[in-house]
Image (tube, rainbow, N blue to C red; front, side, top):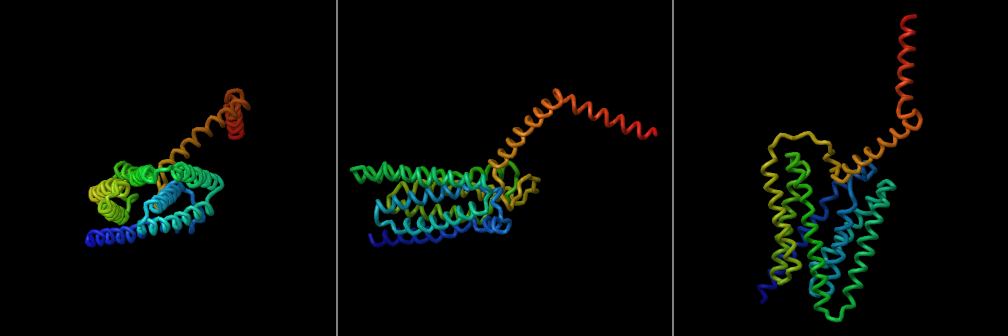
Amino acid sequence: MALHLSWVSVFGDLGVIVSFMVAFSPMPAFYQIYKKKTSEGFQSLPYVISLFSAMLWIYYALLKKNEMHLIIINIFCCFIQSFYIVTYVYYGRKKEKVEAVKLMLLFNVFGSGLIFFSTYFLHNPKTRLCILGYICLGFSASTYAAPLAIVRKVIKTKSVEFMPFTLSVFLTIQAVMWFFYGLLKKDINIAGPNILGFIFGILQMILYAIYKNHPKKMVVEDPKLQLSDQLESVVSSDVNTTAPQTKDKEYNNGGGGGGDVEAQNIKKNTLDASQKV
């Protein structure tokens, strides 16, 4: 029994240490935001979701009791993710600030409040813990599935510049530590999502080994800003919505664009006449 508890403590301590290191991984990106004084090209959604997930795990750990490792790392995650969000909002444009605040209200205020009040007043503590555990499991699984977008980009561009190898290694180690921690504590809600984390981590390292020496393909994105697919779609949609407005304006002013053609003909004739003189 003592040996079992000691292994639980070992994997819990290692999980906390590695998770600390992973939590600091976005620092270079936010240093770029500080230098450029703009958060353009970044998204607040990952940090809002991470904060939401950490809040859920703290609630779960408090209900389950004797989960100091989960409480320590998730309290730290709440602080560091809050710092990232505040920095993002401070340097963001008005549209980005509004979007970040809306996401905060949706997930961290309304979402967490709804989960808290819908589970806290359940009469059966085991039912309450079970429901909350499944919710935490689902969000953790979705968080680990997030790198699939990076995997898709690596395969598409045949370049690993968007996928730092060190981060992939630490994410894989983190998944292994928390998997064994949950396994030894017989908690599927902790162990389950980390199976996905381990699989996706190994997948990223395999892709890195395949494409690390591949000739770089020219891409539109700035690797320092790590522009997202969503930003690209917003830009393209802005272009598509702007073009018809210009066309309509020309139609209204020139009778279907004929005014512009006529003006160009007059200008051409004037130039020809001046050259003859």
